[in-house]
View 1 (cartoon, rainbow, N blue to C red):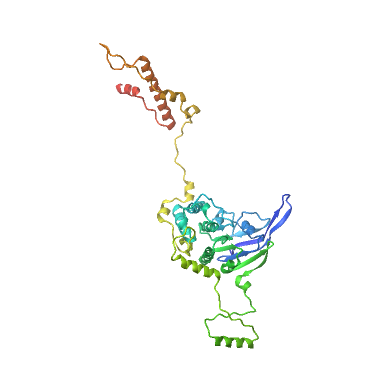
View 2: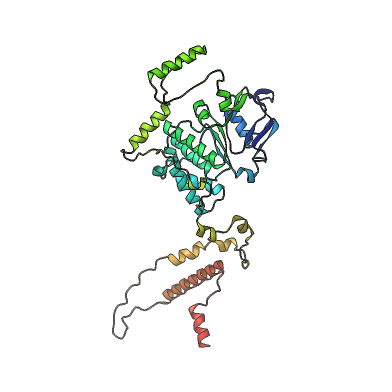
Length: 414
């Protein structure tokens, strides 16, 4: 494989209600994204950037043409397991907290428990959400939702990372953090395809770019080659004296060249980040996201975060599918009459006994209560009800039927 992402005459035409061709969202697109490269896909609204990403991932079927990701079709589970995707809008379950959200996506990739736990903690620390990891994501701001969205895109340690407007809604610190993260991931060997409207961000991180308009590529190439002004020269020096500057001016006049001498300026983003970082050293913890430059251990080449004990005791999924449950003895299906206890039996059993009238004491008559024939018969009925319920319960549970007291007594006498 020479390219991580490649398209061949990729075209998408959206039709109206009657099936008539209406809009060329992407028109005969041919792109090649190299391995270990940060590639920027730029263009105004409606130029076909998001449509291109969806066709690459198999979320949209192209009208014609073909696309390859990591040498195969992105709909293949073996290929999709190596791809991380951050959509333009983060669709998250609002009632799950940050840890539960990442655990959910880790389960989708069938990561074992020990590996999921290690990656979740590393990602939360990396995106600055560890302090609010137990808050429901539905209470997150848009910038915090983008952070947790980026974390879920990295939970499977992908080889190809596709980011659609990753810095939308982020503050300047979050934007700088995402850019630093992209650079570090590229240094580790990952391939990143990036879509963004913020051209300054793309300029800082991308190796090559392509500008779309009307679904077609209008310009593409290395960022340095496209932006370099070959008809001008720029010299940056340290602090020099005014006499040296005047001598430089005289030399440039002999060359018939204009000269403008100014002091270099930092970017506002750099000044903002430095100011906030200095303030964070003396401030208390915030309830929002925290700026950090850490990279998850599992995203660093050669790092091992998997718990060895969990690996030893866990059974691979392929082996679990081959395991069959032990055979059980067949049990006779319960009839509908046996499935539920007899209401009449329960009613007879729970019926309260009538209070017995005390027998008046008389000469020659024992003062102990005497059971009448009716009372003895009622007790016999209740004993029969208990025996029936016990036999039914033992039948449902598959247990051998036990003998009642009278039967046990007879067998014992025998």
